[in-house]
Image: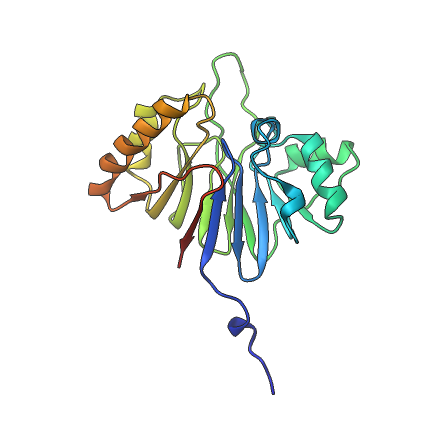
Length: 222
């Protein structure tokens, strides 16, 4: 009897956050690690040894809080067939470390250029891309602008290059149903949780469901 592939795997997306901008995304029988950065690694926010499989690593840009090479090497050592997908600038750095990189994307991970926000002590921001997984969720890296519509958007809420107020003014214009906060390692937990409540209330009138997700918590979106 023929089995149709779409019946084999659920299309419910599972997303968990593991400090700062590191996300683990599961759908259609595939698992993707997004922006495995230094803060997440040093905080031991995600135990790779507990994963039974990993299909891809998607990286928005080369800053160490999004792309920590020692951790990526550990992941590749455990999952030698994992596909690393990123932009050409970050890809060059990884290739110099002996890692194989895909800078074109694949059928379930797409990349789109998004400008990295300007940092006060940097004259030329690094190359940044958004990564869209399964046509449903987009993680935008370090960018507030030109974000394409998606059912779920992982959005930076604070940074050296942007305030919480700037973040919310931009977030309110994003065409999305669900928003996941990223890039908030810099805040103490008590302060961060307080602002999650404020963000949620602020974005409600715009039809955006802001998820106050904690490290390791899994949210499911159909």
